[in-house]
Length: 116
Image 1 (tube, helix red, strand yellow):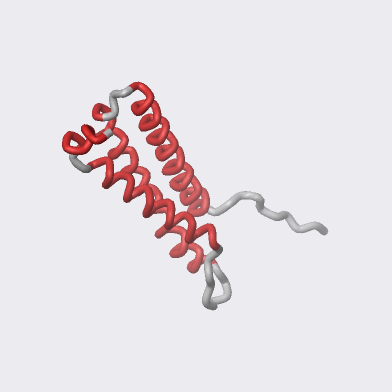
Image 2: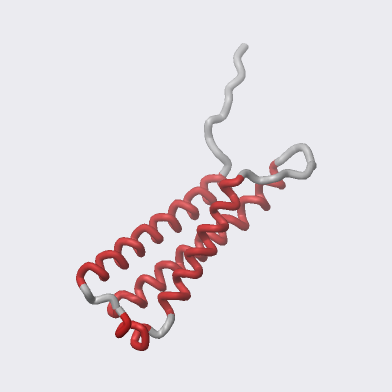
C-alpha cells in the first residue's frame, strides 16, 4: 500500500509567492522605466510613475513578508522557536531599499535636475 503525497502547496504559500513575485515584477518594470527615461532624456516626466510603482511593490512585499511568518508558525506542529533563512532577511532588505528608492523619486526634481 502506497501513501498518496499531496504536491499542492497551501493557499498562504501560493499567496506569499504571488505577492513577492508581483512586487519583484513591479520593481523590474520601474527599473526599466527609469532606465529608459534616462536614455531618452525626459527623466522628470517619469518620476511620479516610478515612485508609485515602487510604493506599490513595497506594499505587496510587506504584506507577503508579514503573512509568511504568521502562517508558517500556525502550521508547524512542533511549537518551538524557528529562525528563518537568510532569504527572508534579504527580502526585507530589498523591501527597505525599494522604499528608499521610492522616497528618493518623490523628492522635488526641479531643484536637483540642473546638477546633472
